[in-house]
Image (cartoon, rainbow, N blue to C red; front, side):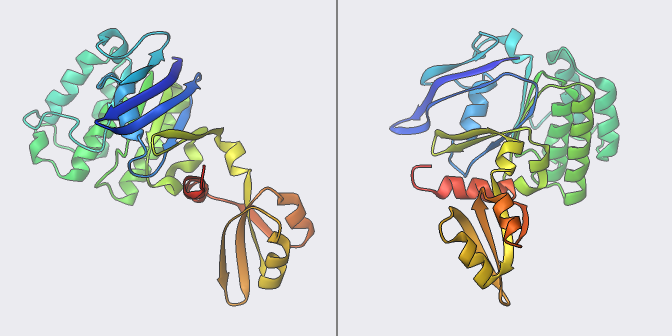
Length: 284
């Protein structure tokens, strides 16, 4: 499903949560939606899911607006950090209601994941721990098989092993049946290798939209003696530097081959470091 974002603005009083952002998502991919707290990520996702109306501009999904459009919102599943389900519903009832709403619902997958995450179907949402509630959200998001599936910090309360299980299942399901997955997270280093395209919001504006591989290859980490590295980076655009015991590492844009010729050790730069840099730069 094609997502077109056209001059999208959302105001809360005098504050703009989104400030005339425009971009297009055309292909089934795993998109990383990144940015600092208050960047406008959650607001964007709620408008996309038809849960909120914009102030101006629009989001079109295959040419239609999602707000108050049940036919369209049945194709979109948004799983937020919390409060996704009514507290008095049992897990079994949450899954039952979800199966009625999402036309492509996979009941077998849902039941398998309930077992994987050791959930008791009879438990009510209000009795779940934070991690168990997150697991339930993950189950609904994956089993919905919605053509547009959006995860907004979906793993709060899950330990590292449970998060890894989620990532593995998500990738497996995506490979078997590609769909548009939008993933917003602050644990960027854990999931960045899944991203095929990265969107960065900064203070309600679009800071960057780029193919993830292009972004990864746009910068490199150079390591060597302090004299070697300082001499090489004098006229380069430097992201950050670190020094330890006479050695130095510098993150710089470009110059991968030149650094190798100079005898420096060269590695890629994590997307998390690039996101921090891009959202710190004046005029980014």
